[in-house]
Amino acid sequence: MTKILFFILFFTAVYLSAQENHPNVDERGFLVKTGEEAPDFKIVYADGTSPGKLSDLRGKPVMLQFTASWCGVCRQEMPHIEKDIWQAYKDKGLIVIGIDRKEKPDAVKKFAEIMKISYPLALDLNDAIYTLYAHPNSGVTRNVLIDQNGKIVFLTRLFDKKEFNELIKKIDDLCN
Image (tube, rainbow, N blue to C red; front, side, top):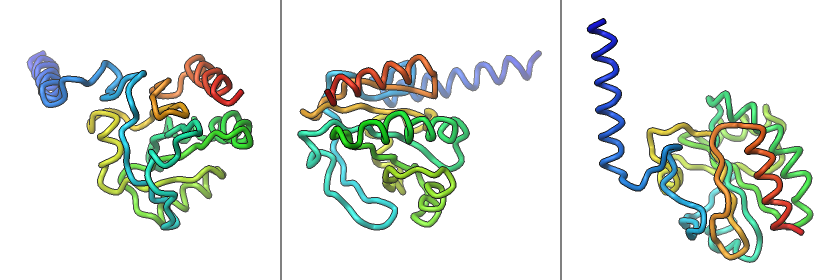
């Protein structure tokens, strides 16, 4: 019983400490909110190419998919992103960028190949991009939908089919 109480107190202290360091973090670990301008960053794909910064993509809707090869939920969600979002909306102007947390280019390229995705994966080697959007100790699986003006219009966490369908509806609204 003492060990259980210790673990509860320990994890509560860690959680509260994280909240103090990031007072704007929400219950799902996001540091950003819908309606806000998406934090800007330089995009570098796993193949070394770069389309520039996120802000350079204004005029088109953009979906950021935070992912990693070691993330089981990401692996579950990625085929749906490929089929139901990327393949369905890429010709309607949607840009999808997977942002891989803390993995080297070769691992990221292999991950894309294994997952059979054709949307690009960008590098976030030191977690600098992820921590613009979410608390560093929160789970990786999340999507950020950004409108043509650079405003965040939808946020998802984990892979919930109902929420994923709401994301698709928002994408459809932006692209049509």
